[in-house]
Length: 572
Image (cartoon, rainbow, N blue to C red; front, side, top):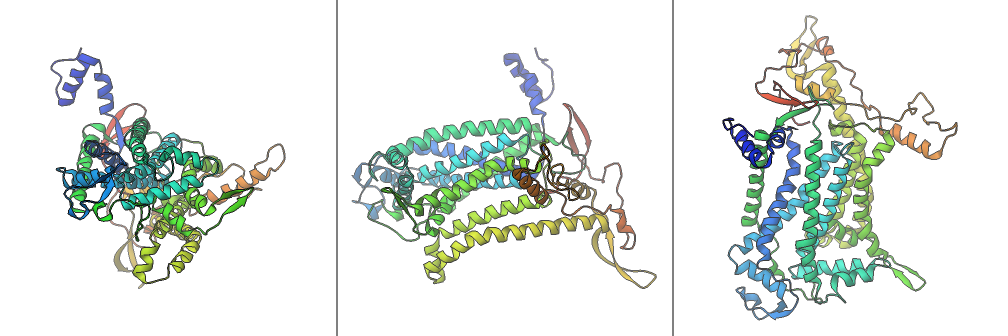
């Protein structure tokens, strides 16, 4: 039994639940759980809260949307389309927009939330990738995130195809053509989705069931698993003073983390509501109903699928004819290669990096992107590859706006899809090395102050000061990227196995030497800044205090302690 006079709101709730469920210990323990604190961790909450908004607005829309493909005569409020034959699905989308109170707001909020859900997921995944937060013990959570991204893409496809307007119908026709071009299973898959020859009379109903039942259920299960693993494993924390792989420095769930997350949800909801109110999106009444014989210019899908449209436009018209069968490579390659390359690369990268470096340790500290230049360069190459394909989905718009030949734009795009990622890799790698050198220089020579001083010898120098304690601790948190044992430059670089050199082991050793190691060592120790390069001002406490007020919680081996606060939550 709980004590009736236990003070505090949390204690009251714990007592209430403990009297009925015996859950006071569980609740108290988890409400005091310590989480690392950094602004980038909130990036993952954007897709979470957007998903909640999607569920709320989607529930409202299901009360009024009719997923039928029967042809009816429209007699609604939108005068330009009165008397026009259209599907029941398109007519109900017009009724939602013009006749249902708040229907257009809910439609637009649902669409904006979908874009923020997928966009936020992409940004969150990039943050995890660049910080190396996918490493052991978080590989499973990374794979769940990749599965969530793939399902979200298909969920978006089924969602905007439901309205049966001219734009979504054109996208659905491309989807059917891609599915039909797949070897062996293409015809059966097309008939399963469409229910016969395109466009058929069942595709909207089937997509509707997939969109509101199947995929949301799977997404909800995966999001729950993702959150549970995040709760158990916690976020990785940024390097800084007092932070190691064996402790957690941050704030407790209650009240700090809950208050921050609650406010962030309201901010997200407010932004979506403002966008739905003032930023028009997907005005289906301007496009008209879908007719297979109609086509329009400047038709592009939403941003998350635009890269597939761009790859279709760039691919030459190649096909393979063999034994009476035709493989339309101009459709199969652009439909499967970019998506497969990105998703498969995301799945395999944590294990490939582990194989190359031989690093099987647990990592609870994040890497600063500059400290692993090859990983950061690979990530920027993938972003550039995606961005070029996304841009090429608008070849007709670019040609009209800049008054260029569309063929010239396609030829340029074909070259840039190969040269762009290579150039991004080289530039990013050099930038990372330059930032590492700047960090080493700040430790070795101090930070420039802009103050010019004249020495007794007549020499003019600029006064340098040591970096802030928190900044120095963050820089010194750098660890060299591991290299396989036996691959040092002073050896043959090949781990031996039974006295023989296997070609795969040679390749692994070569890749480990290139990928790992400390590219720019931190040779300076901070004290060199006071001899010959100027003087330093200010005072630093060597016991880890820098004069700031506040309190932070440190969770180590199962216990929490309170120590002096710092400004170490500065972004890297």
